[in-house]
Amino acid sequence: MTINRGRTALITGISGQDGSYLAELLLTEGYVVHGIVRHTSSLIANTSRLDTVYQDPHETGRRLFLHKGDVTDAGMMVNLIRDIRPDEIYNLAAQSHVRVSFDLPEYTANVTALGAIRLLEAVRASGIDTRIYQASTSEMFGTTAPPQDENTRFHPRSPYGVAKVYAHWATVNYRESYGMFAVNGISFNHESPRRGETFVTRKITRAVARIAAGLEQKVYLGNLDAVRDWGYAPEYVEAMWRMLRHDEPVDYVIATGRAATVRDFAEAAFSHAGLDWREHVAHDERYERPAEVPELVGDPAKIEREIGWKARVHWDELARIMVDADRKALPGGA
Ligand code: NAP
Ligand code: G4F
Image (tube, rainbow, N blue to C red):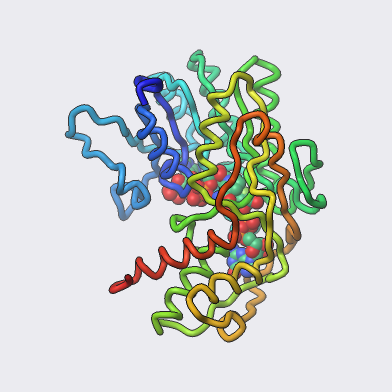
């Protein structure tokens, strides 16, 4: 911990799944952590995932600072980065839901694509020397066949995927044009008990908990044939951090290398609660997408070899972790 004492990090998207785990990791490692949180009309800020690390602004010696902001506001980003002068910046903010991006394509581009360029420009404008992590995604590979690695061709299949390709290449371009330490972590799907409730894994594990408790009977899903390489989010934020501590700015695939279908995940989750998935999963075409990404399976050989990071939790254990957490979270849950 002493080795990082005094280092400062800025996390956009700190209130999200990954942002909250990353904040915990960096605080444990001795960093001062700044995060951007969005204004909401109903809450002081959306910080429920940060409950374990939240510090009252009146506390002395605190190392977590939350700033109201938005990656659609360039001026705010310049001012904040100039004032904080972070050693490391993690750009995790995004409209990250693939299905939603078909309904909100322009908004998704503004946040997910242009947000990245605003951040890169804010770093240039403030003239600081910092390291930047861009949250790239396996969704960029789209229809290109697995296994996918750092050299695999992009063929995005959603407005979200297209926006992330823009942010990915902007990051490469600023590295090449201005010599910035700016890197892309091409993460495959990663999940946890903090996963948003409308992503398929969490939707399933929440339903398992509620069905096991007798609170409901069915969960309605879309395409059960999609294959995903699901890993465990707390491990993925460690990969992000280690990429910024690496000697060279290099892009890496972050993945487990093992995959399963949505059907397999549902079967594992239901059977962990002693239930037969076939009795509780029903189809609803509303959850199908205009264009699907059929099969994502990462090849993590490069990050394993050069950074020494390797996934430990695979999709079947992940299903059990998430079911246990969702059952425990119910009133009276053990
Ligand atoms: P997430 O839970 O959806 O979190 C997204 C974060 O971005 C939230 O903190 C959200 O704030 C914030 N945000 C959204 N719009 C914003 C805006 N206009 N200005 C500032 N902040 C904004 O996503 P995640 O799963 O943690 O993923 C983190 C990043 O990795 C995202 O960029 C995602 O696209 C990318 N990624 C994720 C995966 C995965 O499987 N999880 C895989 C590959 C890449 P609110 O809390 O206010 O909504
Ligand atoms: O859980 P999902 O919504 O995740 P998706 O689309 O793979 O995107 C996630 O992973 C990306 C990395 O590859 C991230 F970049 C992105 O931000 C996000 O975190 O859907 C997974 C699969 C899809 O094939 C979808 O069609 O599950 C299928 N699915 C089937 N029924 C469903 C449902 N997905 C959702 N969300 N809801 C359903 O009812």
